Length: 228
Image (cartoon, rainbow, N blue to C red; front, side):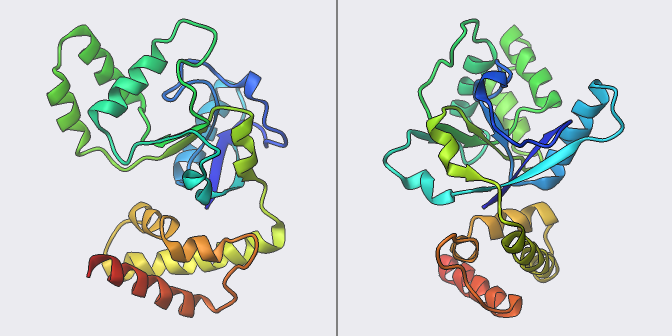
């Protein structure tokens, strides 16, 4: 799965000791599968630094590691009470270390608007139920936090040749999904990146070697079988 990290510089080497504390899922290296959000974050950091433009670094994340027993993994499929409690625990952590022992954590983002309402919840001006109900209408977001040195083996810089082919196929398929299903680019991206078809296409060992049209047919067949 292709993921992105937004910053003011290109990331050549990941150093967890430089990562900010008190983030949603604790201290760690954060990436997202939504390129648009990575660019938004990059521009925001660049502005803080007084720079004209941010930088987004691409990585390949081995999605199969989610099921690897050698890794301690926590995943939130959507905003929920458990997600909220976990984010608050990390945001209010006053110690020098993470309060959990997960290698990586995946889930939605607490952006500025959500964070503002989160503090309203902590102040008692909005109930937990009302806060979570509001989140049902929030646009899809995504992040993965690599929290340990052990987790860094799940991510790598993609080869240029492979990336070029993967990018072209991905763009074509996402475009077709948006047209055929009448959905947003974010929704189409989420469907494709979470499919077995994409996992096979981006495999390091035996990627699918077919035209994008054939791969799209494979995806459609997979999605049909999921719902029938």
